[in-house]
Image (cartoon, rainbow, N blue to C red; front, side, top):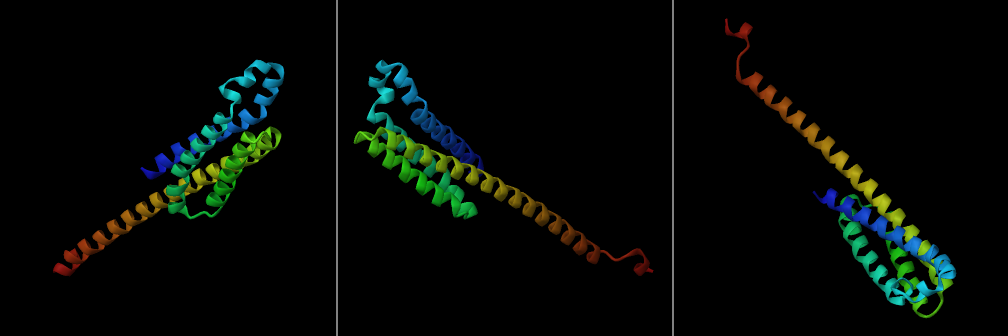
Amino acid sequence: MLTRYAIAWDRAGVALSTLCLVHCTVLPLVFLLLPSLAITALGSDRAHVVLAAALLGISAAAFIPGYLRHRRRAVPLLGAFGWTSVVAAAGAETLGHSILGGLVTVIGSTALIAAHRINRSACAQCTLRREQRTREESMNAHDTSLSIASRASPRRDQRA
């Protein structure tokens, strides 16, 4: 159950990080071609703050339970780097440093995408190991019950 939610949050995180990447790479080109769009909500500083906050929430929802399960250090390290970069970029954009903010957002979003992919892969490996352990325990329990049953009933050649 935990894995299903972690995978869903990881997918949402990858999608939102990709949206940030597209937002910061494609929109400046669109704004050059269509300057009237630059004054809309897509070009506002609020959009950057909202995207950064959403990334933080979604990433935390995926990374925390995933890390508690698999303990891969790359996930929180890349996640923290990505979050810090995106928040710093949102701050840089509000201060008028749009080129620097865009570059830092691209770097941070890429780090978050990598962290989500590692997290999803590690969670899947944990699930496979747990399923394998369950099968082995089931087989061991079956073998134990057979050996107990064979000790409890005498063999045919011992009855006579």
